[in-house]
Amino acid sequence: MMMTRTEGAADAAIAEYVEDLELTLRDLPRGRRRELVADLRAHIAEARAQLPDPSDEVAVLLILARLGQPTDIAAEERQDFAPAAGADGGPGWREPAALVLLLFGGFVAGFGWLAGVVLLWWSPRWTVGEKVLGTLVIPGGLATSATLILSGLVGGYACDGTGCDGPHIGSIIEVAVLALAPIVVSAILASRGLDRRRRG
Image (cartoon, rainbow, N blue to C red; front, side, top):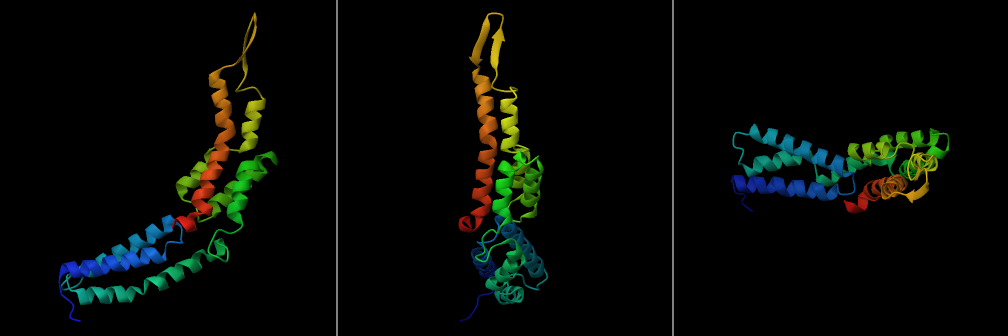
């Protein structure tokens, strides 16, 4: 089959290659997948700019051939992530452990929660933004929430010389936020980290 030497054909070949690569990488963490595709796009653009004729489809196909098949690139990337993943390519032990410790580790003299933070940042399956969220909301997890609620810092009663009223709506909301925030954050981390392979 005769290949046309048009810029459109060269662009189509690159687009098809990148699309195949993204499909084969779909079980890797989204952040790493985007980084790898962006790096390859930049490499292709740089190599293409050095061609005598950047619209030469045959020359562009040779560039893509030197990069390797998308399946081979994806297989190499999976090997890099293998130590942090289970045998099926899913998350290993530290992701579930991180979630449990972030939620309940604060009851172990605070040390358990800190261990959860270490595991959270150690895992490659969460983005930096998700790791910051898991660290800051709420430090200490449910232990901190319970301490603040039981100490009366929130959810208290309003008292004056004639007696005490029930808790104000603002205090009730504060209690709800403190109680639910660590649980909601753990659910977010679970959905975006543990189930990332299925989300693709």
